[in-house]
Amino acid sequence: MDAKFRNMGISSLLIASFLILLSACNPTTLTQVWKSPDYQGGPVEDIAIMAVFPSQGVSNRFEEIVSSEFQKAGIKTMLGYKIVNGKRKLSKKELDEALNKAGADDVLVFKFKGVEKQKTYYPPSVNVFPDFYYSYYRYWWYTYDVVRTPGYIQTDRWVQVESNLYQAKPDMLIWTGLSETINPDGVEKLAESIAKEVIRKLSAEGLIKANSEYLK
Image (cartoon, rainbow, N blue to C red; front, top):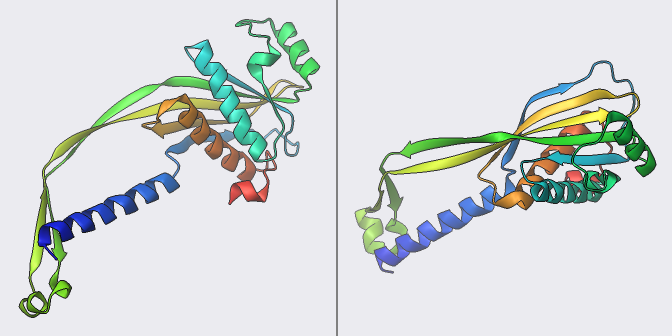
């Protein structure tokens, strides 16, 4: 087999393996997590999902994706934009009445905090692949194929979203966490990634009871 094509095959295999590994990892991490020591209740249910993003359309879509993920986990949720009937601002009394009418006992608010960009320089590298098993002559001579990768600069975007879980009655903060998501491909991927991480964390804290199939 020609060394050029063999190296292309090896490189393709490595790239494919990397992509599979990457797809299996959640691009979102939760930091600055806090749980109220005053909360004595059990797992919450009937959660109103509310998102606060610069665009109302993005906020609504974010709520839909997050709500869908929670329902996959077996948690009953309601869409915030339907509860407030599309209104941007409500008084505390009006919002309390709307939540009560919808049957929401708790509120999970997602607030867009901003985007941080980070540039990373990756210097040139040399990858050495042993190819002596492909031929008795090469095996005897014990040679290596060398592939050189030029240096490059990669710019990553970290999207920060704060997630706050409140008990509606009485009005109190139960849990909060700041999420960072690297290079999300659209609001759907961002919402899905954050929802999965929040669900896992809330479940681990005993604040929701997600089904075991979802947590696998």
